[in-house]
Image 1 (cartoon, rainbow, N blue to C red):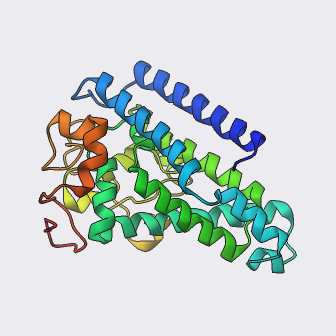
Image 2: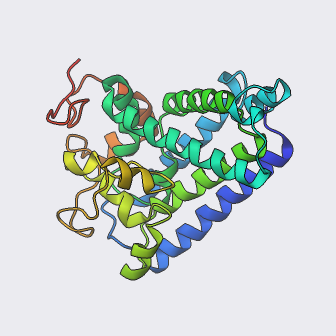
Amino acid sequence: MPSANETTIRLSCFVGVLLAMTVWELLAPRRKLTVAKGLRWASNLGLVTLNIVAQRLFLPVTVVGAAMFAASRNWGLFNLLELPPWLEIAIAVIVLDLAIYLQHILFHAVPMLWRLHMVHHADLDIDVTTGIRFHTIEILLSAFIKIGVVVAFGIAPVAVVAFEVLLNATSMFNHSNIRMPVWLDRLLRLVVVTPDMHRVHHSVEMLETNSNYGFNLPWWDFLLGTYRAQPTKGHEAMEIGLSLIRDERDADRLDRMLLLPFLRRRNHLDSSADSTSIND
């Protein structure tokens, strides 16, 4: 179970970033939204609430709890090294970010995992709530992956909390429908994934969907050849979502979001770069 301090820190940052991005979206939107916010926001926020409950019920230990357990037994690489605390935290955050980048590619490459990840991509618009819209099973699998990385590297609990807060905040930031000056976007995307950079990843175009996997640090996309600077049709004209899920009821109703991975349907993307569907 998470400690009271961890819960307070994470909840405070979540609410603060959500409110800040919401205000920014209202004052300076990047794109005109295509569907009403009411159903989308109710479902997206309802899903994140469900995910929090599911983690409490079904995870035997939190990621922070796993870090504390590993530290108590001196498990993992960092527990064998004598690094300054600040350097250990910095390296740990980078290691965890690379793990999330690779996990993201995996969820696109493996058909059964893609079915779960489709829930995130099925959103017909992209705004701050898209950054927290993930199927419950994907959230649980992601937690197990992070637990494995934390134990293997012996990542300190404080580094885990720092990373989780940073990942949550940057995910809401880079999914936000906010406008910023071009010069600022170019500068920021050297160190963090910006909304214009990540929006490309939510295009219905397969080649664009298979790019810009980073959530926090942009370096992995730069270094590993998955970076795409801009969408072909431009940010205002590009189409968001999945090509075969264009009905608002299918895309944005909470019950259908939860059932989406288990429906028999052809999808616009599977594990191969040159294929356009998944077959049951």
